[in-house]
Image: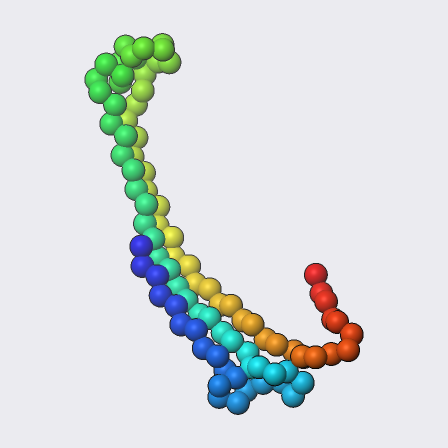
Length: 88
């Protein structure tokens, strides 16, 4: 697994809305991961001779790879308003 991200507070560079006390914050990142598995039953299980009578248990192997990127924003719009503004 490989993961990297960068976070920046753009308010420190003077970027902000006029009625907000702080500026926007941004987080940008990427991740890559790989998973794999191998199941190798013994010969008796492969021939269906194991306890439980479930039949032949065959070997199996598999894998997958995931690449993803993300962007998170926190943008303060206004502070200290007399009426709270909420959005759900």
